[in-house]
Length: 467
Image (cartoon, rainbow, N blue to C red; front, side):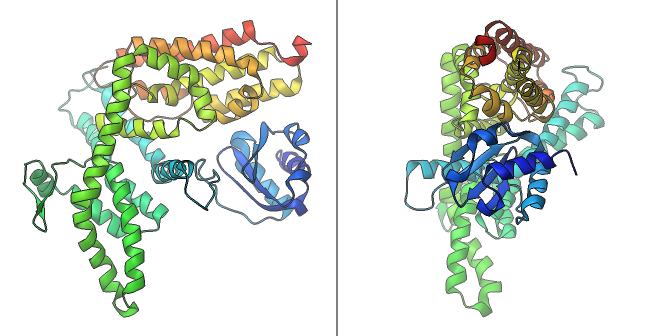
């Protein structure tokens, strides 16, 4: 019997037993139950169960927050209830969106799900991209100056990073084709065509490339995400239509060929330019806000970031800023806060909560949340298990986020590449242009952690202490 067996047993008991469970699956931090009778779930008992950090109903799904041990608990749960196993869901994919009717919420969630399911599988590659860029920056002339920028060692790492960014549309097309259920090889061919050197050169000249006699807009597609997603999305509909109208005997020849014939003009004349200008528009909005408000913007975002993360409000902003990061090589307004500072802030809140709490269960929760964020880079257990149930944590969060965000804006710290989301996330501040960016990023992170911890020690009182 593993150490997670008791947690699985208690959870199953509190949701009403295995007879009350229609289905169960999980994402990165939560068990998700479809129940036959929702009223049979003992919510208070569930929240008090061993290893459970929180529980809530969202739409018709019961979400039980258990943190980074969710995989092990899920396996024990399957064994206890003899349930059918499902693959782990993406955190955004797992959000329930009603199928029927149209609404702005459904449209917004559809856009977010498209980004998360298309770009989510590429996150390990982004971390690799960050690491090779960091090595090039550290050994190069900007920082340690161990080798020149003409050195084979330097250029090997530099070229690896540049190649990943250049061919990002092709990589995004692969993952998007799986999400939209389009032919992956056709998706790759369409996006690779947009990066073909001769065609890229032609697109750089006014009227340099025409398709079916129509001049294509002068757009550069290397490193662009949104055009690739739009192309694969429309490609999936074209293929479905062709599979319906083309006889079975001709499908192997006709579907792919006709798809390319249709998608080429759509890609270069409509979808590609639209995606490019959407990305440019988002860039202008975010950068315009940062340029106009500067430190005020980063202070406000820093103070609100934990709440934006907890309620999912920040996801569309995150994906817009991720596009800016890949397009410009750096992002200032949002990514430094979302990817690094918030985790350090949450670590300070969790540690302060552990120290100030009187009950052993609360202390254990504080330690679990602290370790989950420190090593695993997962802040949800703390946000749902400590922050939201305890309004007394709000003032320390606002103070810490505002001060560290203000410092970030005053020193103009940028986020240059994806790194681990845990305590090592500060490597995202490593810049090939200046070592000051990394130093100031680390100082801002230390401020977020230290101020949150001190504010919790001075201001936070748990219910037992208050009583």
